[in-house]
Image (cartoon, rainbow, N blue to C red; front, top):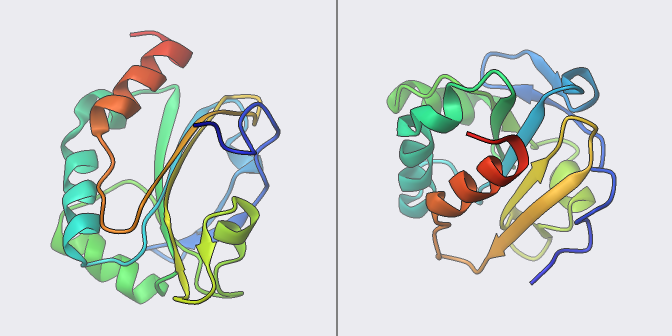
Length: 155
């Protein structure tokens, strides 16, 4: 199933990472972005996904791809989560205005105040080339990430 953003310009955002640094999509033009929204840091499914991403050297070690995880949690929560699991890539806080980035990607659940489990592969020109949104509690398959990144960028 395709998402409304597939084939369209990715919504711009500027969020704060776990180290208090600004991360904006515009500043990363020229590099593909794998943007992974997670509901809550430290929850079982989200933590397992984070660990899988951390261990995916084939995704993390590319010069032509930046893996970014975003949650509506605070930067302090994101820092503790990163430190607990030795995660080095950007963990972005979409805390305030609460869920603005998730809203712009159509994955904010206002009833629960969280980002749903949405992933967006954005090419170097800022266009969403692939996306997947999984139901609550259902982990994404990292093999899908590998397949789509390889299709977009090659081995």
